[in-house]
Length: 230
Image 1 (spheres, rainbow, N blue to C red):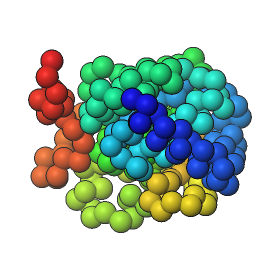
Image 2 (tube, rainbow, N blue to C red):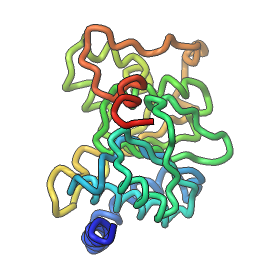
Image 3 (cartoon, one colour):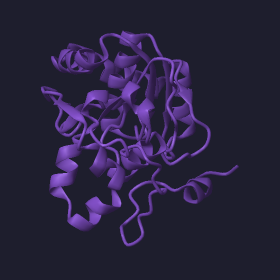
């Protein structure tokens, strides 16, 4: 564990010495106004195994420290060392794979961090929160508009919640000044203002996402159970 902890500390130092944190804080603060009460992270990867994941964890730790908020994280690839590292930093590890379909709390702003996650996972999250409470949510993820523009019509149709929420979303790119490539590129802050809704039927319940005919890009419940012994 000492070896892994030193690697995490090294990544944190690199992150803190970069100009990137100020870009990140500025983008989030403009939307949150310092009101973040909950922090949720999906798809961090394995910090004990992945160099990129360690730097993305450094960002998560920085956001947690800045907003002094309750923090949860989940990735089916977490190893025992990863779980211990997160617990040592007072991050609660979600025990069961909910495929991103977690409903946010209504008491305060929730910042949801998807570091280069599958668009399907983000779509699952939006589906689970397809109601007016999503207005109290900020999503830090790959650009919604880029996801829609770079995929085929068939793929975008399978991401119906992400596609349709993009009609009302306000998207603020986070300037990537990080020294290491591919850690934070293409990240944007997404918010969902109440004034952007013009159709009263917009929040009608949606069917659960079905990716039939598409390659599944996230770990499903039954698969994640098989990844590690009970």
